[in-house]
Image 1 (tube, rainbow, N blue to C red):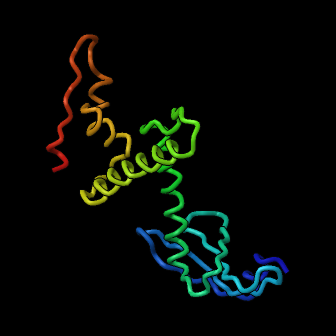
Image 2 (image 1 turned 120 degrees about the vertical axis):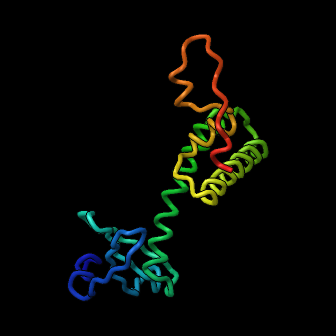
Image 3 (image 1 turned 180 degrees about the horizontal axis):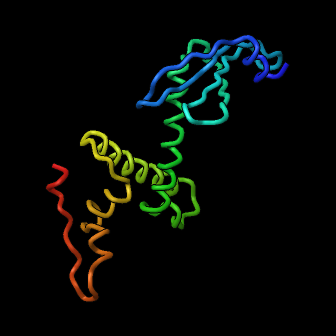
Length: 161
């Protein structure tokens, strides 16, 4: 029997709320011959047409924790994009493992500092906006409206203190 059919036939759907959105879930511990006991979650956020399945070897994991890991995974993908676009990771021209590892560690730390700052201040701005304002010292939106030859505006850092 397929996993989706098993869930439809034998498991009751429940839900929890995360950030104001209902997350519907079903869960089961299954014995898989080749892999042993695994916990399988079927998650679907309200408004999504199809559920997604997640598998873990952590048998005591809750559906809420599984959903949190899923949300964190997306933030990691955003982090990699930001590191490549704004921290020069994509343009690194080192061929040895040590310089690449050091550069990656440094830009990851830089991203973490910005992310931590953003969360602690309760800011709903992108990494890009923080990058332009704090590292480049300019408000990118104002800079794009500048006339030729006009000096770049200094960012209003007092907004974040």
